[in-house]
Length: 376
Length: 178
Image 1: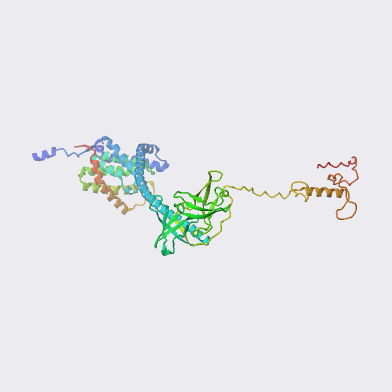
Image 2: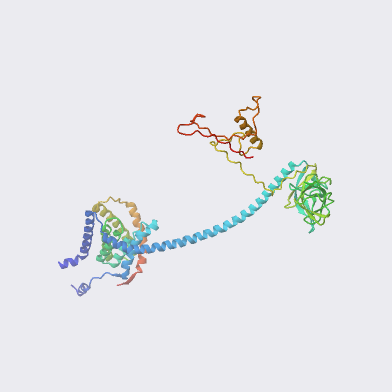
């Protein structure tokens, strides 16, 4: 027996193993129950490693993803920076174009509102001197521009054409030393000569009535210089009183800020000086209308004393009551007129149930009340 | 009988060369193989055809050249694999027990260090393993499992191909040979 087992020990062990597993399998199939202990051992042996590997995997996955994303983000950031720069330049260009278009639109609208015939021009350069207050515009004699033509914008006068060349014109600004223009004040209609001083401010000379000229009054072209048509704004005057009889007048031209497009008046037609408008700083507060009265509230009778009645209304009401108390009809019977010296009877509400003159049972008759004294 | 014949008769039969591994290898390598089978497939789907526990069973059984150890090792690997699956415990165990036994028995007669023999044995045992599992599932447990022979043949070939470098890696775990 021993020799048999020794000879076939391999097969024997194999059969034993197979038999054991077959029995195990049969047990599970028969009872439909799983061998929980073996599964617990296996899962316990394997899952810690799997968990560790999973953690490492997740960590490195995150690291790798972060690195990749970081590279992507960096490259995208660079690309976006380039795009932002490009868009910023484009935006700046478009904003300039838009501002130019807006100014051109305003100029066109202004040119249509004034009677004078104008030509639009763009400022293409300025004078060479440091204090030069002249500019070049891109319209010249070829466009019909001539010397001494007025140059204006929608804000006011700019200057006049000093020289007209075939392709461009030299414009003297109102602040240029030696520039003169006839002006008139808006409110007091004081006439004067505007003179450029070479600085940002102009002065007024030959003011005909210096006492009448008010501070911060608007000046308009008077048209008497034969250059500027009447009615273009010039600026506000600043009046400084030097002595009782001596004044100093400074004018800040309004049309010289951000000067890029101008209108050259080729055929000047005088206009009107607009009426002074209320100062924009004086704000007027108007309350909203009162809410409508509720429908249930009774409207006061016409002529009744109270809110809104006048002295005549009250006197008329008094006479009406006196007439009713004394049985007189105004305009009716030509009898004796009522005594207006008597006191006005006060209005008493009549009982609705009881007949007039008859006292109710168990109650004393109501004594007639004295009329309430009427206050003067 | 001549004297020469007597000397020949006295010579003891040649003992098979038994390969020894580091003791931890017997535990770690199958565990890693099962872990690969269970968890790595979740991340790398295209390696699902790999039957690493079977390859490990074949390798260790062949190298050990002892059918008993091969059977026990195959049973352990199979049972562990069963424990982590949703079917009855013992289905892989029975099949891998036989695979271990056959691999160890074959190693007694052939030179299992030859790559060609490894390829052939691995392919044959893979097919045997799949068919054995199908037979156990169908006839013992009563499950309806399809036997897809073309797919099985291709998978067997791929596993055999992978087995060659895989066995070379496992060869580095050898402690000594005698």
